[in-house]
Image 1: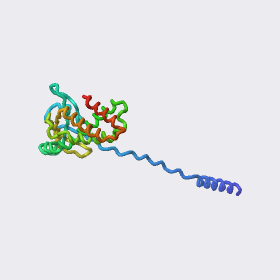
Image 2: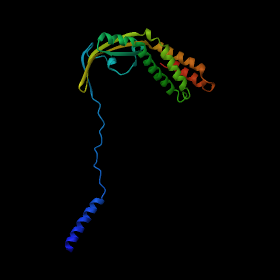
Image 3: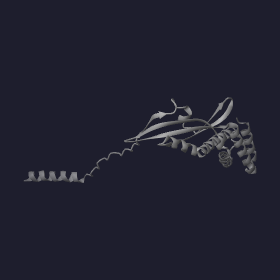
Image 4: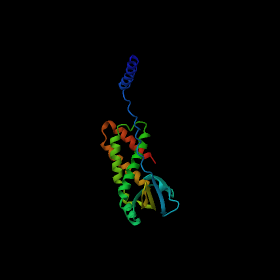
Length: 213
């Protein structure tokens, strides 16, 4: 009888021991981020083979020269299922896209001048911003000369979906001297608005712009 009681006590003790332990939560797998479907582009047809470097570049603007004359090159592009519509869209977006490219170029050129002034440009940020806006408005993009066209018929595959469309790209060029004249004129107007404490810095920057080529 005592032996039976001891066995029963031991069994109860084991049960109580197991019941007293905290239940360990089942580890949950870490959710993996959803991967975006890879986009595959296949060129079915193109106007030129291979495509010109300027057409495949992501840069909206570049500088170059032809016959010893310097130009600013700008590119615009549009897409549409119909080739002629893509061309018309690109031509229609010409002024807006080129104005944005000129804004980028002006920002780049003003930054170069400011860096070359060894700290003299500090405090002129607001005036530079206004000058950039003025340059993008004052450069006559409507008079830009067409410097090349390129189109391609593309199949775009994304996961189980695919679509086809024409991508039309037009390259324009603007006389670099005309661009610089607009840049100098825009900064010259800003010099008049700069407060007296920054007047000298503003003039130094104008001198640097006049000397930049």
